[in-house]
Image (cartoon, rainbow, N blue to C red; front, side, top):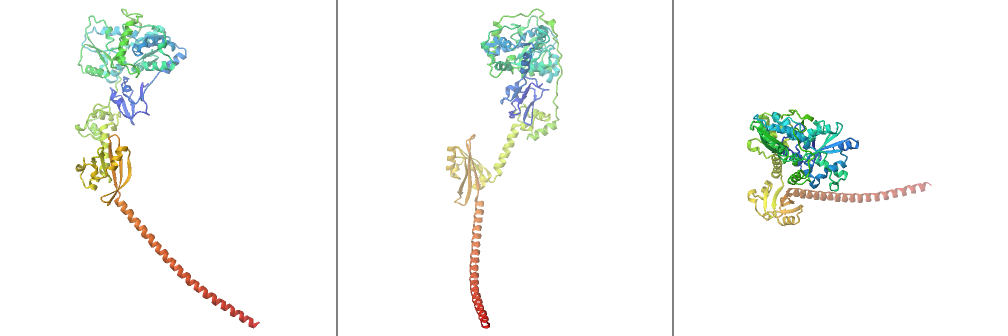
Length: 568
């Protein structure tokens, strides 16, 4: 199961998560951040870095609720960090959990007791060897997945949570559901691997559960833990585990390392053989578990949390204290770490060069190594592209240069006259079309008042109104040139972009076409007039002919009638 994922809808290609990830476990595909589970160590740095709140953490809260709803016995292993997170109400957590239906609540440090006893034996060894504690699940994943050569230095002991979970099963029965509550995301992966752990909740999820159930800690009475250890309550602090050691007759130096990048630096040093006879207490989180990634964004600062943990350890009474031999015989503490290394394919120098060339990098001078893509160097980014972990377009300088190149091409090639004018009505840019039109070179025009070339009144109006002036018709060069002027206000830079489109030839063509139309109309009118005259003349002739015909026919009729009358 993947612990962390990102919402596709809101991922905006800022690459903040890629930059934050210390082990390059995030790839960008189709402009979407994707966690590569085979590389992820669940340190949670990507979640803290994401500015768009697109992070998603797999939750088992509903699963735990179902345990309780179905009548199963739920026992909580509570990380001591929780007592430093809930302001002054940490001592009410047991009451709140039991109100939710949990049957028993114990501190995870009960399991730390037996683990500490095993660790303590290593400080008496003198084998010119370095040792790394295996308490931190994220550090364990880091070594297994990225530095498998260092596995022999990792103490082969289960984590305090694993130990406590096994102890809870022995104490309350194999059928109980053991649920861990703490600040760690990597514990969710650990919970999948350890069969004695039924579910893992973060402190953030616990807060959510309280809110959903309407539980307010300040309204509850304090209820004691079912088991806990005062001496082990500093475990979540830097160096907290080694403070529990009896350092008498130790033969090895104990060094605390917190923060994943410092851990990586030390692990790489161990891999190179730089250290000898040192016992490293490692925690992936800065400030150890008190700085865990799943505490909640609204939590108070780290120093308040430290003070609360110290106060809690001082003020509470021990339920029992660590005894000689502890509980070592009860459970199996051994652990075998696995090589989970997933190598990145190393391209040839020629292949790297080709990828770099495709993003405009042809020499070492072009490799800016700015880190905006999330990778520390351009070459590492090229290797990521080769392994389909990154996209060429993630290079910000390249994309900026590409966009500027397109802009410059448009600015230089367009036939429109373009001037850029600042608030003081001074020219700050001048394109080649403007040079040709005004017959002035760019370097001569820069810093000149715009009034030398154009009326400054429209520019002043735009500055005052902060609104664009579009499609204004002007006559220039003593009315020999006609242009359409648009002045665009650019708010961010507080400058004006003046675009002049020379309409002289278009207007001349339009005027010529208008004359042709008028001439055509005149010619048509003349033809119509002539046709009217011809029609009138024809009508006149037809009238005369018709009249003569009528007279002739009348005479003929009369003669015929007279002849017929004589015969009768």
